[in-house]
Length: 156
Image 1 (cartoon, rainbow, N blue to C red):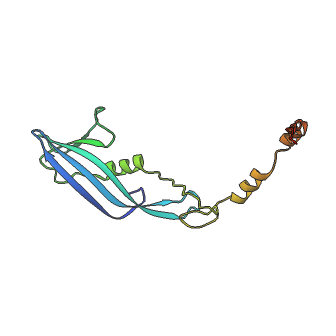
Image 2 (image 1 turned 180 degrees about the vertical axis):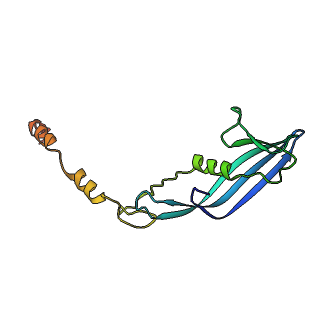
């Protein structure tokens, strides 16, 4: 798959026949390798996507994916002819990965401003910290105009 999926995919399928269709509920698990948004190194993680496939038989040859506005985001409808032995699921699985996962991950930082994935120092972390501590000169001048607060009277 072009998404960076690597290794073996495993799927659990629950098939329920109806009068006119077969409803298949699939859970697909695999690993995906993406580029880290902080250090651009490769990050590999596990993905799990769920989809529902409604399969209907047709008399003519071939396979047709059906578009229907009534279907949910994870639902697909396909009509298959008598010549079809396998239903290719690469595109529905890829679509579910795109819809459910951030393909440009930006891992969190630890308390020392390092990436929790690779341990590298975050880019521009020091500059951002210095800029935060630095007071804007416009605010300094306004602060000088501010009258000092009167001290509360102290009792005997």
